Image (cartoon, rainbow, N blue to C red; front, side, top):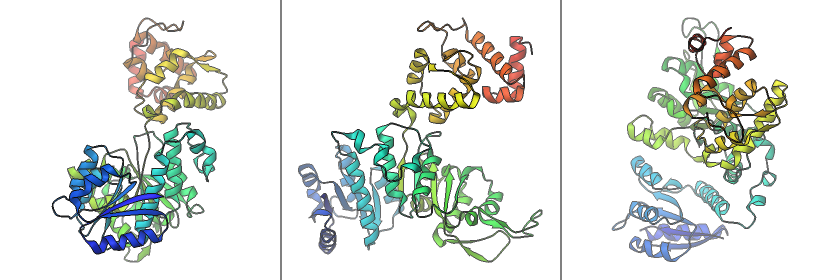
Length: 456
């Protein structure tokens, strides 16, 4: 049974929460009226969740949060307050708060938050057989994650959380570096949700200029501007009843953020050039590779929009944090591109695997996939070797050593020259395609061809 401690300076609130939570039969509840004793109880009793009032005399809620963080106490905290102070909310969340609720409390929302928190706590508990607890086979909707290749325990835990959040209709922010699979997780959320039979529409939120946003997002009426010859549905109407995935939400300009916030608040909109209001029933799933707390502090992201979107959060680990997935994924992509290019490269050299395990992969899984793709195009043997790596890696890492009998030319220039020759041969001397594979501009490729005196 989940153990909850409630700290509040209002005895009526403590009595209400104690009775309400005990009636559910899910929780064991202790209460504390005197916040000066908070550290004593937190240290001496093994609580799972803390319901914490912020506005208390002597020792405030922020004081308690700082104590928990400074002493690295494993306690999930849900903040309660009667004041709609967004700055206070941000301060609390930066100190590790799980969620934030305004008084008077919404009982259903409180229980939803406590259930989710209890579920996460259960996932974090050590087990003697974690491989069975967090395997793909224990997922209720295994098929929803079929596009995400992993054997990493933390990622499998994340899948279980995704299943939990997906069945609600709340907005979600997915946090993670570029290339970690945020869109795939968003798609999995949609497939599990009650909206699965309607559309899932992914868009790059940062790709819109201010003047285009209203037209693309909300649509436009005939005659709204020059060239608007017919009525046009926007993304909201296209996704009606389904899910809209806004990737790179942190790139939205402030004027666009205002328009998005208005839609989230009112759940209606009108097309550009029209005064007719249209209801929009859409679940918003957002994603970011930015620290939105820092963006809020800089004035680049609206606090009210953040709290509208961040009802639930999912964090995706970088590939650097999943070292056990690197070789696993490399061989998955090897098999995939063998089929695509009708090749029979049977293995990846030991020295290349060693390099992969030490390489930081700033582009994460997407970068590993692109590296295997590019390398297999130019590899002529039955083993994928370091000398077939893309130019940007060869230029920035000293790969001229001889490892496990794998020969590399004597200079990085020689390696690059040979790699360019192989790519040109593969593309039948199509410089545009070759430049795309090499990750450089066509002008840059032509310059290198001249410098290296490559006959073509």
